[in-house]
Image (cartoon, rainbow, N blue to C red; front, side, top):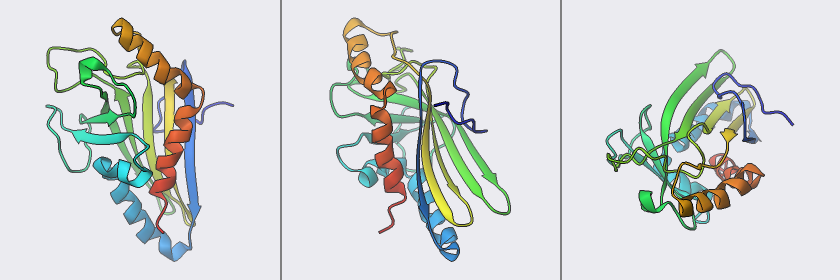
Length: 202
């Protein structure tokens, strides 16, 4: 299976990838209201764990200077990810990504919003440029929501996923432990929890 080619998703060049999508059909007159709720959830990064359950990772939004913020994400922000299990000691047990792009598309029949993130340094540690993530800095995750006349979709597209070997020995072991299962499909199952929860309005 080949990765989907989408205008706001970086091209797949090497390593692992996944296309994780959830779709839900609604009556056309309900679509605008449901999409408004979906957008609120999408931009409420600090609440993602509450949608997907405690077994999933916890997300926290930070600004460029590493200060926690409670607002919509912006390009240049960072997201701290707390994955159940051991984390990177240098990053106090957390993984970090930077928001590198936010895109909006709309025409007469459809609308989509995407946010692309890339493994990054810990913005709270100015002296260390080390990538604090189990994937290398070339990997990306693009979060996307969209509406059409009769359905809503939430998705996560992973591209160029391979372990981060630019780390200390025990961090490399940890990165392999998390990254390899992710490349082989475990991450897709976890992201599906999030995309399904975005569309759960009951």
